[in-house]
Amino acid sequence: MKGAQPAIVELIRGNVSERNREVLDDETRALGPVRMSQVEEARAEIVRTIRALESSGDIMVRRSDEDEYVS
Image 1 (tube, rainbow, N blue to C red):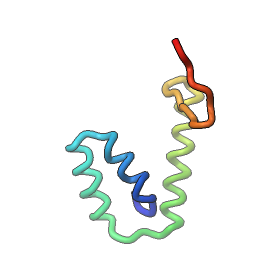
Image 2: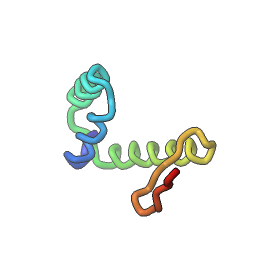
Image 3: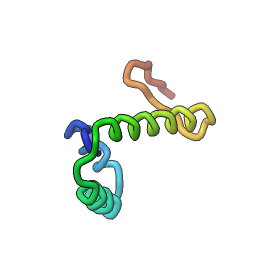
Image 4: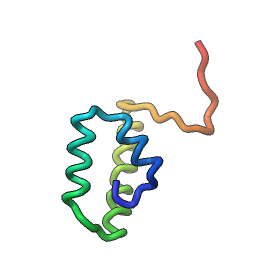
Protein backbone atom coordinates (compact mmCIF):
# COMPACT_ATOMS: atom_id res chain seq x y z
CA MET A 1 0.00 0.00 0.00
CA LYS A 2 3.00 2.24 0.50
CA GLY A 3 3.47 4.48 -2.52
CA ALA A 4 0.21 3.40 -4.16
CA GLN A 5 -2.25 5.90 -5.57
CA PRO A 6 -5.24 6.53 -3.27
CA ALA A 7 -7.65 5.02 -5.81
CA ILE A 8 -5.67 1.77 -5.83
CA VAL A 9 -5.53 1.67 -2.04
CA GLU A 10 -9.30 2.10 -1.82
CA LEU A 11 -9.89 -0.53 -4.50
CA ILE A 12 -7.84 -3.06 -2.55
CA ARG A 13 -9.36 -2.09 0.80
CA GLY A 14 -12.84 -2.38 -0.70
CA ASN A 15 -12.20 -5.96 -1.77
CA VAL A 16 -11.16 -7.39 1.59
CA SER A 17 -13.12 -8.03 4.75
CA GLU A 18 -13.36 -5.39 7.46
CA ARG A 19 -11.05 -7.43 9.70
CA ASN A 20 -8.45 -7.75 6.93
CA ARG A 21 -8.70 -4.01 6.27
CA GLU A 22 -7.90 -3.37 9.92
CA VAL A 23 -4.91 -5.73 9.81
CA LEU A 24 -3.69 -4.18 6.56
CA ASP A 25 -4.01 -0.65 7.96
CA ASP A 26 -2.24 -1.62 11.20
CA GLU A 27 0.64 -3.26 9.33
CA THR A 28 0.98 -0.32 6.95
CA ARG A 29 1.20 2.11 9.87
CA ALA A 30 3.64 -0.11 11.76
CA LEU A 31 6.02 -0.24 8.78
CA GLY A 32 6.71 3.45 8.87
CA PRO A 33 8.63 4.98 5.98
CA VAL A 34 10.05 2.59 3.38
CA ARG A 35 12.46 3.07 0.49
CA MET A 36 10.94 3.36 -2.96
CA SER A 37 13.22 0.53 -4.10
CA GLN A 38 11.53 -1.74 -1.52
CA VAL A 39 8.10 -0.70 -2.81
CA GLU A 40 9.10 -1.43 -6.40
CA GLU A 41 10.54 -4.85 -5.51
CA ALA A 42 7.37 -5.77 -3.61
CA ARG A 43 5.25 -4.73 -6.59
CA ALA A 44 7.42 -6.81 -8.93
CA GLU A 45 7.00 -9.84 -6.67
CA ILE A 46 3.22 -9.40 -6.70
CA VAL A 47 3.22 -9.23 -10.51
CA ARG A 48 5.39 -12.38 -10.72
CA THR A 49 3.00 -14.21 -8.39
CA ILE A 50 -0.07 -13.11 -10.36
CA ARG A 51 1.53 -14.24 -13.63
CA ALA A 52 2.44 -17.62 -12.13
CA LEU A 53 -1.10 -18.12 -10.81
CA GLU A 54 -2.53 -17.13 -14.19
CA SER A 55 -0.18 -19.52 -16.03
CA SER A 56 -1.16 -22.40 -13.76
CA GLY A 57 -4.85 -21.68 -14.29
CA ASP A 58 -5.47 -20.91 -10.63
CA ILE A 59 -6.74 -17.42 -11.46
CA MET A 60 -8.04 -15.61 -14.52
CA VAL A 61 -6.93 -12.04 -15.05
CA ARG A 62 -9.41 -9.87 -16.89
CA ARG A 63 -7.73 -6.97 -18.61
CA SER A 64 -9.69 -3.82 -19.42
CA ASP A 65 -8.67 -3.84 -23.08
CA GLU A 66 -10.09 -7.33 -23.74
CA ASP A 67 -13.51 -8.08 -25.11
CA GLU A 68 -16.11 -9.27 -22.63
CA TYR A 69 -17.74 -12.67 -22.84
CA VAL A 70 -21.50 -13.02 -23.10
CA SER A 71 -23.42 -16.19 -22.34
